[in-house]
Length: 388
Ligand code: PSV
Ligand code: MN
Ligand code: MN
Image 1 (tube, rainbow, N blue to C red):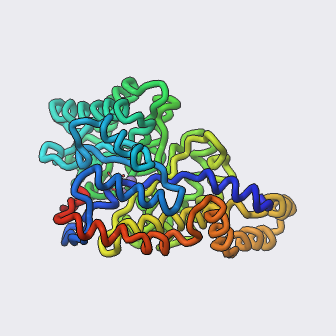
Image 2 (cartoon, rainbow, N blue to C red):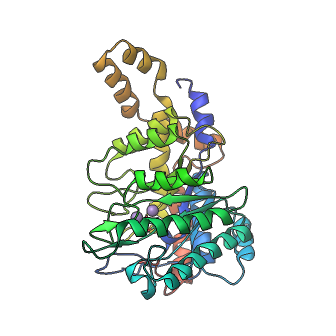
């Protein structure tokens, strides 16, 4: 796309979902650092997410995580979000923080524990109904630490059984997004370690089962953009959990470790039709801000995704195809790199002003006084969930 106004139109409709847990205190297993002004309730996490949308105009939904965001009245939580100018997005399940799940949740050898895990997943679909959510995000920590610990194949059967039961429960306008992760917390074998395993389970179940690519869940050097291209071609890419990694599942800000990789991913999204209206590809952030301010970090992350997207949209697809078809390796690579090396910040600043926003969301947020206000108002903010 070379036409700047078409690129702007495409960017105008980009929606990036922020996670409620990004606003809570987080850390590693060594230490959770308590920051100032951190939300004390699910409602306050939504209030913070609304600030990210207020200044970027691109983050209209916030994902919740159950039970971290447990409330008595989910319809009221959805109404609270609407009041603040955002909506509740994906409902994230949690079958990894209970003593019962030491040997697994839906793949646990004990049928009583499998039932408990499945009940939680089904309860999360009830919550989706209450808040009007389309997506159920499933991440399982299930796996084993030692060879021989459990039967790998039986665990796949149990996984398939649970996924089928959840699939069955989904409404017509709902779907589940199945996450995979190479390792951690299981260190020998993970029950859904890679996109192939997630894809195979989803393929069997049907169109309401889609794969979600968490950019931090691969072995170093994995060509994530290939996975994206492949899943899009098969109609099985449900969305992204964006974050950056240097080593393992670091959950650092998207675009911080490798902005070029983010661009390559966004290029494949655009190329594969994943950016078209109504495509269903969800752009979500799955991050935590252990040492940096959280709302500011989320705004930065949204901007990083926007910049990679703008570059991907600006790429001269005709010139690229011509070079590819004539076998001109260096010209094809030059066209690709030209797009990546374009400074899109002025274009995005212009677009924001056209949308009635400040050209610089970070400066506008800092000038708003919101942070100082919540620091004064909120004491003893909540931990995000894990590592607490
Ligand atoms: C754990 O690895 C994880 O980071 C997964 O990516 C989930 O999406 C997230 O936690 C929230 O449950
Ligand atoms: Mn994730
Ligand atoms: Mn993760």
